[in-house]
Length: 223
Image 1 (tube, rainbow, N blue to C red):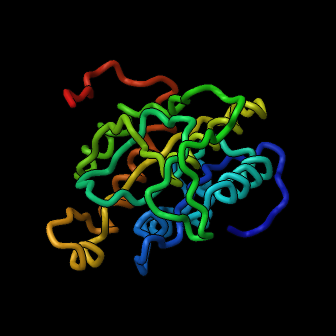
Image 2 (cartoon, rainbow, N blue to C red):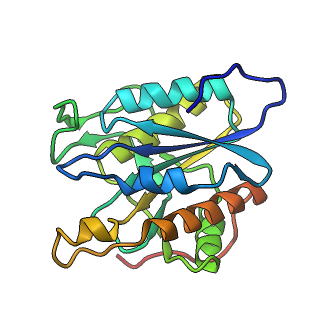
């Protein structure tokens, strides 16, 4: 993301993606992020590649938020085993890492913010985003668990920073499946072309720009 001074009245969307982790050579969240258009909904799209690391991912995102004062903040991350874009509804105040992050840290049963609330709900219109992604021809769903690894860590930390700093930005997180190249190395793993991910994400972000309030439609799950 190019360095620049904040301009009065500057309006932008901050979108983050992660570097590869867990032995993968790519991370489709960053690959899809790079394919997003330069502008969505009349707002300039700022893209930030994050390390797959606890704490540092939050720190870098918080710095970008404080510098850019974006209207929207959308984190992207890879979720193996998922077949659709997962628009995350909630992030919990807990790290419980199954594997170490890229810095070798593996927090287990640790609070992300010891004095923070148990959870934050995304402040984006998640249902409108799902509907928009589907209208763009991309499979998408509401997800009610962002996990307990770095993606949930970032989503919670980003929303906590927005709340604590008094920012008026709305924020949330989208999980993406494996790319086909990754799935080829993981038998039976679902995947999605990166180009389709980017198309669905762009449509979802456009819907977030358009809808200050969410749609009143059912997107619940039985499990």
